[in-house]
Image 1 (spheres, rainbow, N blue to C red):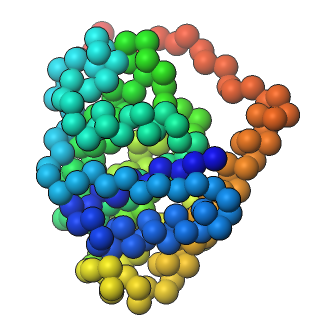
Image 2: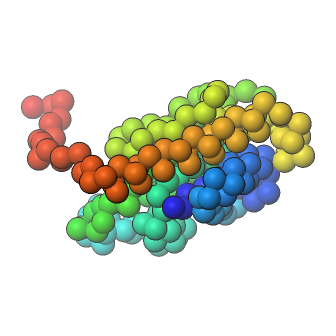
Amino acid sequence: MKVMLVNGSPHKAGSTNRALEEVARTLEAEDVEAEIFWIGARPVGGCVACGGCAKLGRCAFDDVVNEFRPKAAEADGFVFGAPVHYAHAAASLLGFMDRLFYSNGRAGEKNVLAYKPAAAVASARRGGTTSAFDDINKFFTIAQMPVVSSRYWNNVHGNVAKETEQDAEGLWTMRQLGRNMAWMLKCLEAGRAAGVPLPMQEAGQQTNFIR
């Protein structure tokens, strides 16, 4: 079993990364492989609704989003982390997720996200963590991904990683998140071994508000 942890901060070794490291260490202690993927310091733009992914099976903008897709295909679970910028998750992570999720499963390509547990992590100097946390969680609930929780909202505080070390409760929350993720992955593995099938997918019809 493997979990991909996405560092959506422009700072590779900042507070967000420190939180993800705590989750990763806990996962590995539970015999679950963990890898942290940094999206980089350059801005990552969002989806422009060009429709290219419907033909290509991947995002038309060939950058870090498409680099991550093969790793997502091999992963059993995900943690997406971001710092708070103006009371929302960092724009580059949201742009990254917009394009990753929208291009997923297009043009006959495999859906690499559905039914894989996922969790959000937010870091902040002071405020805005819960709204950023909410930003990220919405991606999971539209993509049929079980949401993994902790003992508190998955947030840490600190302007830099050294300050985050002082957030004892935040790091405690990260460790419990790692344990809960490992538990859910093991439950899903046991279900597969017992022959429990994935839910049936209904061939529904999309409707618009304008008739």
